[in-house]
Amino acid sequence: MTRNAISLFSSSGVGDLGLKANGIETVIGCELLEERMGLFHSNYPKAKCFQGDIWTLKNEIIDHYKENYAGEPFLILATPPCQGMSSNGMGKMLSDYRKGIRPKMDERNRLMIPALDIINALRPEWVIIENVANMANTFIEDENGELVNLIAYIKQKLGSDYCGEPAVIDAADYGVPQHRKRLIFVLSRNANAKKTLQNGGRLIPHFTHSDEDTLFTRRWVTLREAIGGLPALRAEKGKNSVAGYDGLHRVPLLDEKKLFWVDNTKEGDSAFNNQCVNPQCGYQKNRIHGASQNTDGINQAHTDTPLYCEKCGALLPRPWVEDAKTGEKRLMKGFVSAYRRMKWDEPASTLTQNFQYACSDKKLHPSQSRVLSLYEGLVLQSIADYDYSFCVDGKMCSDGLIRDTIGESVPPRVIDLICAHIIKISS
Image (tube, rainbow, N blue to C red; front, side, top):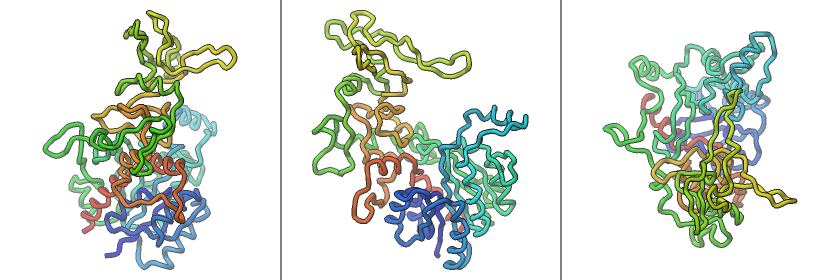
């Protein structure tokens, strides 16, 4: 049985790996950015690629499918950009709107409008929408300039033919060695899907993993299990890669002072909490870093955290900045999530496009003085479990594109399990 799919906001096509694993062929991809589309085309050479703005391309996508394929698509996968989907200031925005004050809107949040036009025109049997958890709290201006909740708008536009409810899931609950909370919205006009919901079932699969072993789940996959056996690296020249191993298992260098901070950071802790390393002192009760809310309710890092040992006066291995003229050092501004090591026996924290920056939230290796390698990012995002190439026209793409692809993608294992589940329902 042929099952065709259309991928909207395809990025580099990582989510489509989950479709491919279940015999679903992505026949159309649409992506704004040329370099992402290049990677997508390299991995799905038979797919028709539409690179550009979905607002201007939607009719071409609809026409191409109708002209080249009989019947409706089995599935449309839509993973719109998430940068604009934030609940920050949502209360004020709604209040201003009700007062007649035009709120400032992020136009990226409206990209679901042309996507829904495509869905309504082609009537796929299944729709999978994936985004950040805050999508549930996102408001957009509809075609009439009215402010509407995005989830409610999706339901209204698709009508009663489609059933389904959004769910916020953690990728770690599906065997991905990483905590990554996402909103998954599976909708269907399949008769079996409607019966499944009527009988108390779900259109997304049940969890396979949890924080402990149970009769129904296995324990989360930890960093130790996922990457603990890989060759050791250090963010120092000559030690930041391993000859004869996967070429992506390499890390950016850290300068001498950052290595000083990181070398003295304990597993699970932040360099902002490092204690005295003066061998004649070794005082371990210097005040640690923290944050608290100010009178406006804004979370702010403390400014009185010591940079010098409160007992002997020695410089602490805590992140500092130095005045270019005077050489005076002061504690770097930042929260305790910065320059923080992850824990071996837990899943990784969420990988973002900044996962190779030591100052990013909880991105330091649990025990080695470095950030995660690109290869480790592929493992923790479950991309390494699938056949995927970062070569375009025979040339390896840039580290930045690989890093961005990892950080912005949906773990393909999650889409894989969802597709296996909906195929079972459809049968």
